[in-house]
Amino acid sequence: MKISYKIRDKVIEPNLVLSPMAGVTDSIFRRLIKHQGGVGLVVTEFLSIEGMTRGGANCRTRQMMKFWPEEHPIAIQIFGSDPERMAMAAQMVEEEGADFVDINCGCPARKVVGHGGGSSLLRNPGLLEEILRKTVKAVSIPVTLKIRAGWDSNSINCVEIAKLAEDCGVEAIALHGRTRVQAYTGWADWDLVKAIKDAVKIPVSGSGDIRDVETALKRFQETGCDSIHIGRGAMYNPWLFRQVAAVMRGEEPYKPTLEDKRQLLLHFIELMLEAMPTETAALGKVKQLCGQYTRGLPNGSHFREDIYHSHKSSEIVDHINRYFDNLHARGYERYEETPIDSAELEQMTCEA
Figure 1 (spheres, helix red, strand yellow):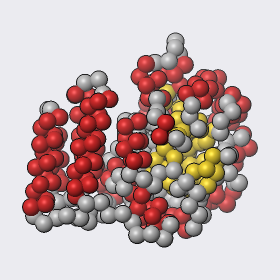
Figure 2: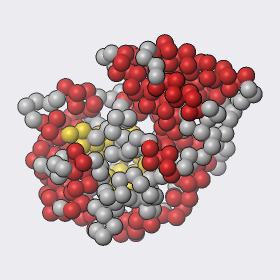
Figure 3: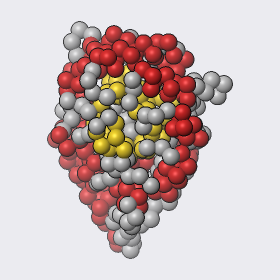
């Protein structure tokens, strides 16, 4: 099993990608996950080309573009439907120092598709082609594309879109194997990942429902894909990349202790308080991670309820320490989480 691949001259090793997630994959989260090991490429939250290019870049959008040197290699993902502005936004991405421009052709959110962006572009191949050709021409760094299976079950066209993208000069493509209508219900169709891999010569990545080592390895073997995107599974288990990479190298996967879990949460709180303008803003992000991160742990639902009703960071820290101290007192040291099921997965934050 291969453990790396190239996008042009850039080696991605290991061949595991932190998938873009709206409201989640900011620089702090990307660095937190990458610090655990096993991540070959990170992708930002998607950025609106309107916020980037109209009347000067929106301050929040510009801030979302920022990243630290240790995040390389990194792709900045953009979305929109105006070919000229997509090209302008791609140039801004290149100027920012990113390794790749990633175009979002998969987001199912109404506010995105309502303006012709995201997965709406799957219904307009002519416009998508114009966007891709102008964007590729506008920058010297590689352009990549993330797509969905199609708009609905009656219009599965991801293979055709992948061929179009390759013809336009796109240098890697990622498929989330659900339709726009599915959103995040049901299961991703990985047979379509294999179909795309068989149809194009550029690197192909698969995305959807990767939440444990066994599933990741199975998807690699079944599809022959070059890489795998992991999104919501990384919120549930920040060590998942490290574990998959270890097994791919023939090593035993790392098993975090409960103390590892405690310290990661406390470190995340520190990072958020340092970076966010207000404590209130930081707490929202902290509660989000706590909610996903403790699924499957003993009495996790009670812990999450305590966290959600906290109004200060000191309260959250107290709840975290009390919760993990209680687990230690009950004899848990390296608790094996209950596997997360499809219903829980659907409730988690959605990938872009």
